[in-house]
Length: 327
Image 1 (cartoon, rainbow, N blue to C red):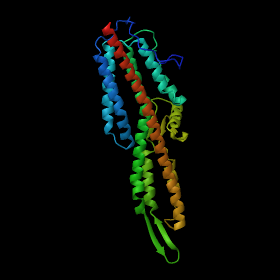
Image 2 (tube, rainbow, N blue to C red; image 1 turned 180 degrees about the vertical axis):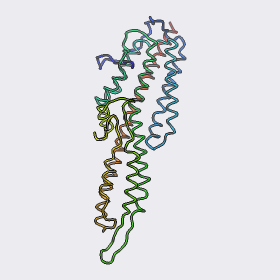
Image 3 (tube, one colour; image 1 turned 45 degrees about the vertical axis):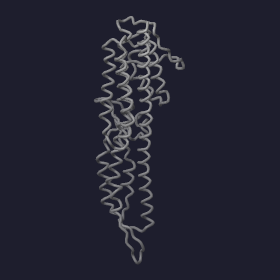
Image 4 (spheres, rainbow, N blue to C red; image 1 turned 60 degrees about the vertical axis):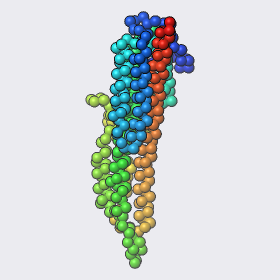
């Protein structure tokens, strides 16, 4: 994949657009700014789809996914059209993009920064001259960050939302129907819990979701270390790294099954003790969902910032093109 690495001086100011250095490799300074305007519009539209997609994923909907994918395909096509049309990416703007892209992920964990750097490995933007082929490389880079960084958080959150939603529908919603209360003259209030129905619901849920991969290595890949790292990045315990994939944390479900009362009928004190433990496990599941959602939100914001760096780069190229027209 392309190496969009920034210069070693992390605090160097973003270079100002150059309007005097003519391309020396057959590219042109974009006498017609329209291709750049089309690319800028596509970049902004793609950015505009990120927030609706986040809302859709975190509420268990998928309707916004098609708009996001269409917007990406349009942006990818516009960037590749710039390369095919030999529209130069001036060296100052190329360097500015590299610096800006590196700064976007500076607040992320060392693991994520290493992953993004790996995605960028292969070719340098700081080549010292104008180059139309760099548009292709930028498109490849952003596409891979979209898939292998943001996409991981999006997919993991989407799957956990479905898991928790089904838990709510199949366990929490009917739970009240599985609890009955009666008064005994000698024993006082007695509460009966339909443990069979509750156990069956929990077991069915576990069976359906225990092997669902929130992250997995590439096909035929062997990467347990990657699974451990991504489990940590997603806020999950290391036990969720199973082989070459990260699975949903089933410890709360396991604990609910393990702690089911041996006797279906019990007094109020015993029932309340059981219910407190059950509610505590449910709260753990809620916290996991909140953690995943927050991490997805953070990744979404950083990726949006990366797209905005691209938009700024394209806009600067437009100004360069207009300056050439005025010479």
